[in-house]
Each structure stands twice: as C-alpha cells, then as structure tokens.
Amino acid sequence: MRIPVVVQVVVGSATLPVSSLLKLGRGAVIQLDHRVGDPVDVVVNGRTIARGEVVVVEEDGARFGVSLTEICEPKTGAQS
Image (cartoon, rainbow, N blue to C red):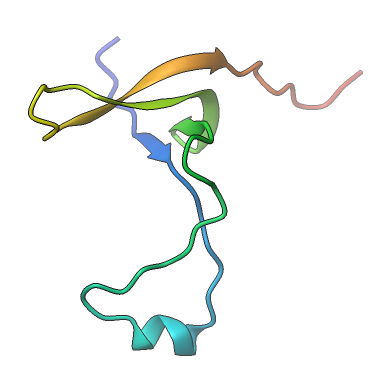
C-alpha cells in the first residue's frame, strides 16, 4: 500500500508540428481538443481509471482538484 503511483489529470491534448512548437513563447495559447465543461481524464501509471470535473478546492481559488464522476471499467487483456 506504500507503492507510489503517478496520478495525472488530463484536461486535453493537441498535436503541433515541431516548427509551431519552436515558435511558442510566454503567453502563447495552445488550443486543446477538450472544451470547457468536458470531463477530464484521471490517469494512474498510464491507464485511465476515472473521469471527473475540475473543482476549486480552496476558497481563494488558489488550488484545484477533481471530483470523480465516473470510474472506468478495467480493460481486459487477451480474451479466451
């Protein structure tokens, strides 16, 4: 139970050519494939385990969290 795992919350992704990536600077905006209000994916060690909504954790809005709305079914390997 003390084995560390990597937990990521994926709010979206984008595909860019390297030439565009090299032109990015401070203040640049990258358009993602998710929209505001879309569920975010909760990924543990590379596997999506749940989906949820981004929520404000502290009253001053300084921290965010994820409220889980759906637990994903585990994907099975080879079927017999």
